[in-house]
Length: 454
Image (cartoon, rainbow, N blue to C red; front, side, top):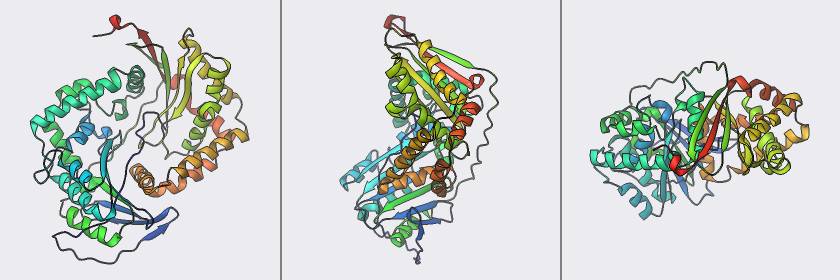
């Protein structure tokens, strides 16, 4: 996973009180799966609902996910998805400004939200008998969000300051951002989730309202609930609250075809910093491609903690790097990157670190890693994946993540693909994807404060 990936978070709740509307209730069938009891239903308006029933869980999780990440934006209007996430807490006619979180907190729960390239999501963690609050309030703000211009301008300033802190004032993040922008030509991953500063300055309240009305509709969303819940009661409540919301216009699926890169690209970023930094990004397929499993293992061989080849060579043996590693961003809707990165020790040259990174890759290209080395990485991937689902919260997150990729059932095939990887597979993908003519390299050049660009 990319070190920038948004690591899934959140929390969880469920169960239900009744509501004023009358809905015919019918018995529901809970379908056992290898990963637990999952109930799935799609409402007439297109809203999908997934419920993971766990009678042993003391809490419940409510999550609502929208296909409304930064890939759904357009050039000149970047940052809308993240800005809308902020505005979703500004209230509706029924619930005033900042009331949403106060109600959840008063009920003993917590709430939060997140935005990535691919999606935006909102979650609450509550006692099961308070789940009605999540269902009522999320349905309300799906259709009735207030977009006060004063609040919009205030929140725009907040997001711009957030951007300054995360990118303008973080040299390595700034380099990463510039590398991605240079690597991709026809892919909306090329702009940051938070948006470009000039776009944030110029986006209007009407731009954001149009984006909200288009993307925050039942047929562009799904709900995941996990915990000790009564499935029939939960579904009845969801139908009462979300069922009347009209279906929105269908949003066409993106068909992204990145042109072939025909030569190395380089960017140099001058920024106040203590040490240089280099990152080499290679475009690579996502988890839906059969090569992704071998790339996942390759990343582990190169950068599996202090026992990984890159750390052992550059940090322990050659002593030229303060830090160094590799990573693979595979859990995305579209192909993204496999990267190598490093920071030299004081007095060491950045070129020396960069060349040493390529040397470690070349060793695998020339000779596949040992069976033992590959098996160790596969064991670690499997352990991390299984242990990462040790709570109802994490089970809900994993289900939602794979549903965003195409289907939640894909999670049942992920480990099967990893287990089949051989040393020859690792060597093959290294030769196929980590190619000099298809990489984009970013180098941070430290400067003094008085030399900084104003």
